[in-house]
Each structure stands twice: as C-alpha cells, then as structure tokens.
Image (cartoon, rainbow, N blue to C red; front, side, top):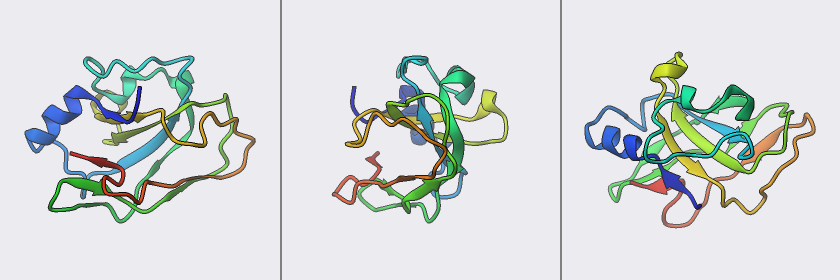
Length: 136
C-alpha cells in the first residue's frame, strides 16, 4: 500500500463535509499488525482498534489547500510516543467522538518506517514536493 485516502473521505471532501483548513485534522501512528486499513469501507476513527493507535493523536497546524488541491500543514511533533512498533501514519478529522471522526488517509510509505517508539518525541515531516501531504 502507499499513501492513500479512504474512499469515504473522498466522498466527504466532495460533499464539503470535511474542511481540511478549518476542521481539527490530527495525525496518528498505526500498528499495522493490529489494523489492516480497509480503504473502501472504513469511515470513522472507531474503525481503527484502540490498540493499533500508537501515541496520542496530534493536531496539525497552519493547514492549507492550494488552488491545485494540494493539502499541506506544518511538520508536527508527537510528544512522548511509547507503545508497539508502528508502520503507518493516518489522518482523521477529530470531532471529539471517535464514531463521528472521519478517517482521511493512510500512509505506510514514509522512509523512516517502521518505528519502535521509546518514549521520546517523534516529528512527522511532511513531503515538501509538489503533492505535500496529499493531493485531493
């Protein structure tokens, strides 16, 4: 798998149910041994088993969508990450309720993967190329 958006997220983006610039978009780490992304059917954060979420989901800052539909944000520091090794990074819109917090994307391609957390901070560095975090 590569960096991909959940199908339901694409539908929600098309219906303006997700606003990437104003919604609370968070990054989270995923133990892919405990969660296999179903990009067609998974829709909400509660579709990801709690045990598969490594560290504390952290909000993105200074989000933007360019005229070409490219989503970007500042690199983000996830503090004091501990738990199982993780192999993927996900994004979701946090509504405060996992059953209504929409999954956006799943990415298992970052160069530094897999990561075994040791309680220190981990910085997520977004691609600075043409497609940034992702292209809509």
